[in-house]
Length: 173
Image (cartoon, rainbow, N blue to C red; front, top):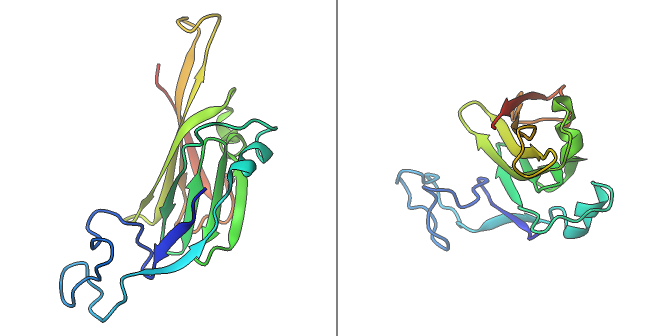
């Protein structure tokens, strides 16, 4: 996985951020109101491709579908098989397989295409992934399709468990 780059205020290049290489102008909307360098302040390694197999019994998913979100003090990243939380300084807080993370929803197969966003208004992370279970054929009335959703209880989830997350499965067939 490529390095995660955070500016000194935690921006990851979201809409409304100044263009690359340009610091926000003093007194302008979105600016810091003080002189800033506008560059990257912290860099650290996230999980790597080999971690993909470590967390799910030896399987490697290609592509891994990497995505991450930065909150006030945490960065949470997810791929098809792994979810992890780090401080903005790069210290690993926790890591888990995505199937174990969603265990309260009893997934019966591998999940795929995970997404994560940080809700800045409620100070929480939202993780969603897809699950499909095929019956006897790819087109079968017994097939199951669900959206698996997890919402952190606050912006600093200390574990990948129900102690820090709310879980919900939505039938999507």
